[in-house]
Length: 463
View 1 (cartoon, one colour):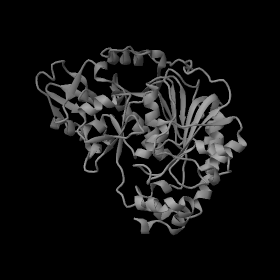
View 2 (cartoon, one colour):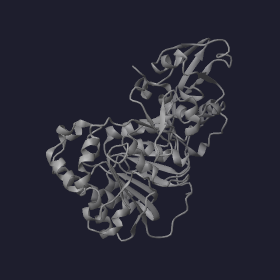
View 3 (spheres, one colour):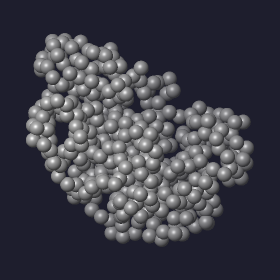
View 4 (cartoon, helix red, strand yellow):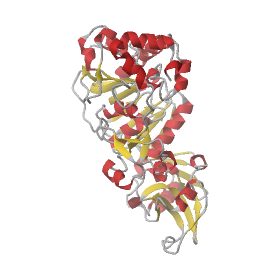
């Protein structure tokens, strides 16, 4: 592995680390670490450990993170399709874990795809407040939206805007902002060797300029008293201490905060920036100090009085035709909670459930999803959507098919096959069923007699 690393990168790291360089180099001979992070919106880490089919070891600096063995295949287990965990490199779990999030807040993940950090932020909102998850690339944002749907996040706005455009729409709007900035990716060389092949010495300078533009827009969207976390997966001083130095010099209203520590964390190095001693508050993660790849974090708070954590509802009440309302009321009569029709929005024949908190309008903003997709109105009937299933619990709906992990029908369901039911399972009668694994929803099916017609989305099915 070491011989495949760019020589210019190695020379710079040797200059940076000096006596530590040999240990740093040797860390590339060690196998990469594999991690999964528990979805605390659906299950506690303690409860998951009781049902886990994997050999897991706690990640000591992330409360809901665990190492797993490379021999395990958690992406193929039905629990993954139930959204109980996200597969994420251990160091990459750190930024979202160090940004304090409380239910009811307005939160922005500015560079959110593919969703590793956004899903954690959404979990901690617990369905209250609003998560705006943005990525400038529409294709990457589709992957982001899929992960948020799988995670059961029902209070999100998924946008595909430039930071400049978002800043025009959301001036001093957010309580918390996470900027996991696009970077040269040096910290991922061990995990993704192909990244090393595309690296050249000009990349840190290019990304540093881009990062300064992004953080400037982010700061303008942060309300007084709000907090912003900046992170990268690179070792480059230009992209790390250099960018933080830029913020401290140009935005005096931004105060650099201490980050809750861990014994493997390294301090920021003032000499790699503008020599401001405050840079020591930053955190560097080196692979020769911790069981993870390279990362950098800095946490800021904006001067001013903090705004209330819980915001008032901000959208216009939905307008629904009487026929559509009746179809929705008929379907949702089998739910344990009542649908608030003032939050329902019908666009074409597609039905959405808007968050309780949010902007008055999203007109003029390029977005893929605003709120929870409930389903589609079709010829005098309503067909529920997959995101609705993933946002539910088994207790929310009256007709449930609950499968055990070792029931072969679970894998057959995830492949899109029709399932046979026994008399007890089909006893509630014909109609829509919520298919679950160990009590956690996987998707919808429609029962007629002793057969469940599979409604698992084609694009989600396992091969």
